[in-house]
Image: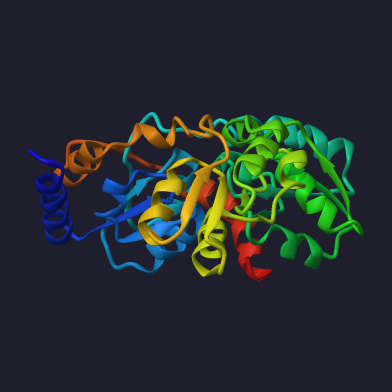
Length: 305
């Protein structure tokens, strides 16, 4: 079976079986081409909630599929690759945050959406990389614990100096691998290019950027900009996607090592197996866990996240 033939069969089967396929932006382009929706994790979750599909396939990582299930508990939710986890989401556990809360009862806990459902149960509010600054500014509380990504938290802290934000040592190992030395070298090699980075990068990398924002924010900026050259400081797949979207522009990866190995676990054949009914991992969560974990997400939505 060729790539095209497999794609055509996926498109036929998803229509026949009323399946919605969600594809995170870091997936490969052959998977993009069979998607119903492409984007960042929470944006995909909201699209799933609007869909009338009976089954949702998340081509991403586990915490994303969990969030889909929390907002669409009536739907059958499959993670396309059972082993696709997220090291950042799994760095901190419930007991760690409960211990902090006991020692610091005056702090509210702000959780990046990139956290497990279990961890969300002991957090006050979630944020995304695109809504973090807006929500932290809007919160009435002055003292906050921001978890798990200390780089994103540092970026928020710089922009909201009026808040007392405590950080824990955690974050995305993929983005943390990028160094300021690499950023300086890329800017020297491509002096006409704008540097666009994800705020999960180290502070010294973000400080060199012309723009810092979410994955979809980076893509939108590059597509709308009058500039013709860009250095992309996020998962390297975005370079290829932008090359398809803007063939008249040039895109360079900031680091060849900025590769999310968990995202790359999903293949087109995995998606094919899912629509055939013989692949993926079904996400099952009891009603109590969904209710407790969803409170932090509902708070985010209340603040316009």
